[in-house]
Amino acid sequence: MSVRSIRIWVVRVDECDPRKCTCLKMKRFGYAKVISRARWLPRGVVYLHPNAKKLIGPDDRKIVEKIGISALDCSWANIEKHSRIPKRVRGRVLPFLIAANPVHFGTPEQLSTLEAIAAALYILDYVEESLSLLSLYKWGRNFIKVNYELLEKYRSARSREEIRLLSERAAGRS
Image (cartoon, rainbow, N blue to C red; front, top):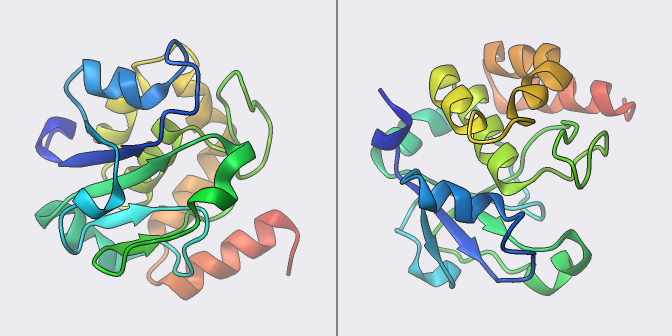
């Protein structure tokens, strides 16, 4: 399966510098469809959002394969303004990971939209698709280098609960 065969939507609220916007580059290269409202997402899609209550997990793979994956693209400074997750989608949060993008390099849990989607794909065992997305940027492979051990542990986890425990341990919250 190629990354182009996985349907990707990004809800962009137009708060970042268009020259640095990872979702616009994904759109330009034909990897993602960019929309301006979450209500336009397909029913049941996996929606990556930092305020979601449920972690991404192995059982999301079939949903991503069938319906697709989406993410919110907005400034981290304004994340609270965009806290609403539509009921018609499956809100998911990523486990603990560290950003490798130039804006937030080394910052825990402040991933770019590209990093978030690539991380979710990696965790769901779409490794080649994840690497293909990350190759859009010179710094993209650094995301894998920085998070390789965690991504591999999350990918091999058999449940959300196992991912949650691994994430808490990685973040030092256990």
